[in-house]
Amino acid sequence: MKQTDQKVVASPDERKRDYILVPLIGVYLLSMLITLSHLGQPYPFMGKIYTGEASESLIFVDSVVKLYLIVGILKRQRLTLWLLIAYNFVESASGISNLLLLPVQQIVTASGALAPDYHYRINAFSVFVLFLLLNVFLFFNRDRFDNKSIYLW
Image (cartoon, rainbow, N blue to C red):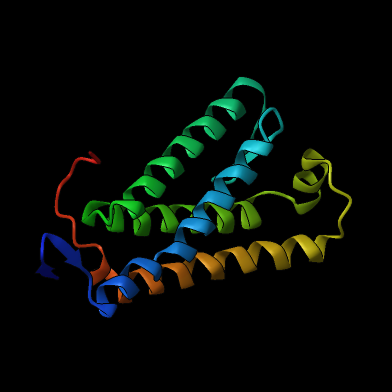
């Protein structure tokens, strides 16, 4: 950055650095909104379907974690980078364990969706691949997270 007559002028590279994380914010914001829309419905997590108060608690905690991650991305916090990678691995493991441990028809019935088994399997595998690709994207863009503070303020 250069300072000219009390104005701070950002170089084109620094402006580009800010915009590369915008799609990442969009992905996690959309994911948070989708998760919140399922409040009160059964919630599959790590090979078990939770209902009632346990389901609502898991959805609330998941949404708060996603909100923290969104704010951390906005602040370009280095700690958030590693939390994002860990969160993506947990979500991937949950999706695969749900696919392997739970009968697909039970998940489809609990969610209230009318979808064939193979659609659910394709969707679950696509989400697994998406989380792995997000981790690859995060790893290669780890230099964008340059705030070393552990606090969000």
